[in-house]
Image (cartoon, rainbow, N blue to C red; front, side, top):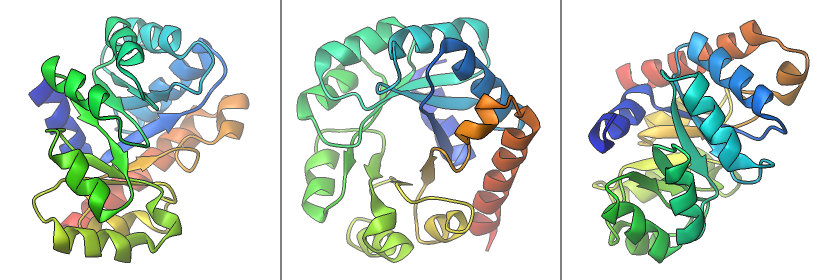
Amino acid sequence: MNKQDVRSRIEQLGIIPSIRVSTTEDALFAAEAIARGGIPILEVTLTVPEAIKVISHVVQHAPDVIVGAGSVHDVETARRCLDGGAKFLSSDGLDPETVKFAVQQNVVVIPGTLTPTGVIAAWKLGPDFVKIVPCGHIGGDSYIKDLKAMFPYVPMIAAGGVNQRTAFSFIAAGAIALGVGGELIPREAIRRRQPDRIAELARRFLESVSNARDR
């Protein structure tokens, strides 16, 4: 799957699930559960113990799932993530060298920022999307709407504070996709091995995205 395929899939689905788990088994369980619910994409944050091993494990055992790396803040880590099989790189801040590296490697990259100045700085580097994080705590969907009015050409991913109640509003405000963590993949559901619960949450988030786009 090439860069354009990954980018198109993110745009189509409108959801990037982000997991923070403690074992490779938990990660694979989460990946399979959300894929069952219709979201064959997953971001493993580097706050996860041995995250790159987790990425490689899911890539090998769930070949139909697009696996990315989150919280990537330097070039060397980015390189290791790609070597481990990651198909996209994401961060909650802006490290210009990491974005430049990803662009050179022809891989989808999603830097994070919060301010208009940050959006300008990030977009000049040539990423595929810009993540607005944590947007839920400083105005929510109205903040995304304001940013989109300023930068209508920048595809923005809303993250931080996205849940079932706010998902529709963020997409309606102009976000091209949503970054969702525990609201989609509850730790309790992983611990208690409840794949149907996660799959149902995935379906609900997809429905919110679809309804917002169709409004």
